[in-house]
Amino acid sequence: MFRKTFILCTVALATALTSCSSDTADKKSPDARLAAGKVCGGVPSEAASSLEDITETKEFKYINHSSVPGVLKRGLETSSAATGESRYLFCEIRPQQPAGKNAVRKISVFFETIDRLPPDESEAVGVTTLPIGLRAIGDDGNADIFFDCKSSDSTTGENDRSIVHAELVYGATPRKADPRERNLRVLQALAFKMAQSLGCAGNGGIPRV
Image 1: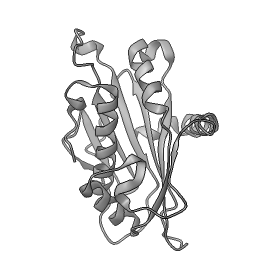
Image 2: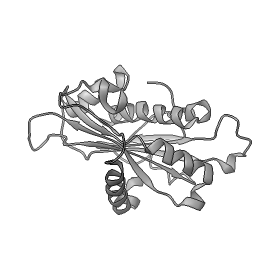
Image 3: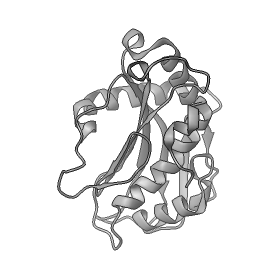
């Protein structure tokens, strides 16, 4: 999927952002384990239930990088052509479950601004799509949502839109419930919150979960 083009860049940028964020007021879960609805600053019940299903646990810890919305907003205001396309680790979710070969160790959520949609992969085998934003596609261990983030007072044309790409990544592992739509529901909740933070017109076409 789209992520494969940027995998090396993602690792480097995520590491750099994590290092920079260690001295900021980023939100970290306390030592006590949290319910699914508390991760990443809070998600609605449907997204929390989906998170429990794909991880097969009900207890979590997380790290939330609070600087990401501001970085993305600056990127949207200046255009990706001027700043370069960079993806940022927004939240890392750590399921608290017994160690095992099928356990989900962590779920990472990235955001980036891009200047055009990548090739459509909705016809690929083993993927699920939902009518969210410009495009939403999920497979066994990942999900991607693309949404338009013009401001509500924007006077730009269709060709001038700024696109935000949200990505959930953890890698496929065997589990009881089909994770594809559930992956998208978790990401939808976080992408909706991001669209609100960025002031995207109509929340970027992302329905509230």
